[in-house]
Image (cartoon, rainbow, N blue to C red):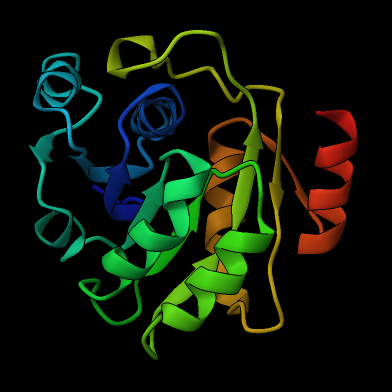
Length: 190
């Protein structure tokens, strides 16, 4: 059996966005294990029961400790704090990415908090429905949708390539854009 693209994926916020990425990668055989991380035990239990996650925890440090890729799918205002907390417990060489719709604050606060040896690839999948929670997740959410990645000058090129590949496997067309342009465009169309 060939090694999956992502041996272990940790999803912080196992709802529509995070759960759908996990399911898309599972459907493609691109992920080994998915660890679902969140505050709500009932939603985590649902994610486990539905096969969105293979293991669940409410302990962020425990959940990200062995992950090769950590995807933050939490409300945008919580992202900088959660990014810093997750980064403090990630293994060297791991990649942190997110699905937030605003990039400026996440990059400004999150990137400096990263210890040396970790990689940050900010992202924004342009997809969604009106539903939320693990039961709303589905493997084809990202098919034919765009995902904007907003690398900075500190972004490792190998980490960027891997995250781009993850989104392409999920069915997205990946677009690279700088942080300021992303936020200007998204503010104009919101």
